[in-house]
Length: 205
Image (cartoon, rainbow, N blue to C red; front, top):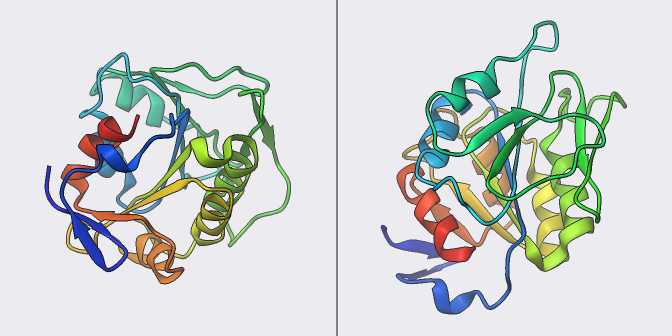
């Protein structure tokens, strides 16, 4: 794994930094997200010890094929999440088009069609904020390639409650808007090349 950027300090080896057992990973992506998600998720084993919840900005007018595509390309089970579903380790849950995805403290999901946030639904901010409230220091948020600033408010919530934030670096981002907005908060723990994110997640969980 490459060197990890922690604030203004570079460190190699992060296992000693994490005494907390992380119990959920929330990922957000927009433009360029399919290839980025495939890169990260393909580096994780089928027995990954936490559920992974994904918000990818999607065309609300069409059924999403994201789960079907990822299922054919990675080892983890992937499914489009259903309202009220209980999250399980080793499974990737993708948001439905035109529905916000929220996670409860009991590890169940609710879907809502409440108003757009930053002109999008599903919203990374709402996902991250619900994960922060429900899992606190046991949460990891990952911000991948995408336009706009969705996710930056959620990053603040993740950090306020003691969680950890990873953002994709500029060099490997097809679109740097979302990672840049996350970085601008000053609260991102690790700025990583895309190819290093899965290894970091394995070290943390």
